[in-house]
Image (tube, rainbow, N blue to C red; front, top):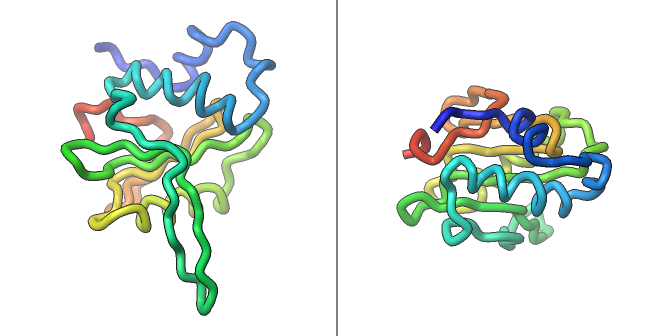
Length: 139
C-alpha cells in the first residue's frame, strides 16, 4: 500500500469539504474512512468511550472520540475537532491526556485532527509527527 497523508486522502475522496462542518462530520466522513484506508477495522475501534478523571476532589468523565485496539490493547486514541478549530497546544494536550488515561498501559499514539491538519504524538517518546501511522507500524 502506498501511504497517502490525511490531507491528500481528503482531497482525493471528499468532493465538497464545505459540507464538513462539525466534529461528528470530521469523525464520520473523514477520520473513520481514512483509518479504514490505513488498514484499521471498524471492529477494532470503539467510539465515545467514557474515561473517568479525578481532578483534585472532583470526579468527571470525558469521552474519547475514537480508540483503536491492536492485539487487545488500546494503541491509538483519536480526538476529532471541527474543521474551524485550530490545533494548538490545548488540543494536543487534551489528546495526550486521553491516551494516557484510556488504559493500562497507555495508548501508544495520541492523535488530534480537524480533518484538515493532524498532530500525532507518541506518548512514550513525546515525538510529534503530522501523519497517522498505518496499522502495520503500531505494533
